[in-house]
Length: 153
Image (tube, rainbow, N blue to C red; front, top):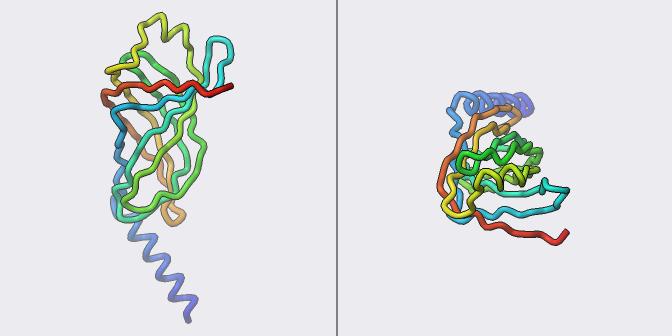
C-alpha cells in the first residue's frame, strides 16, 4: 500500500513538473569577464570562460551539458562543447564552464578588442528534472571587458 502511494506521488509530481513551464536560466554575466588561456598549441590557444547563470525556477534541475557559439563583437570566437553535469538548486546562481580552441591569427587580423566588447552567446543547454530531459535554446548579448588570464603551461 505504501509503495503504491509513493509511486503515485512521484508520478503526480513528475506530471506537474512537466506541465509547469520551465523558465530558461537567466544570464548574469559580470561586467569584467575572465578568460583563461589554458594551453597554447601553435597559433591556436585553448581558453576557458564561465557563463554565470541563474535558475529562476521553483525547482532544482540537473544541468547536463550543451553547446554554445561565442562571438566577440562580430568575430566568431569559436564553438564550445559543454560536457559537464551538475545539480542546480532552485533560485540559485551557477557557472557553466566553456572550453574553446581559438584561431588567434584570424582574431588578430580582424581587430580583436578586449575592452567594451559585445559578447554574444547562442546555443543549447540540456537539463533534466525528475528524470524528464529537456533541451533549451539559449542566447545572450552584452557589453563586457575581457580579463585575459595566462595560466602557466
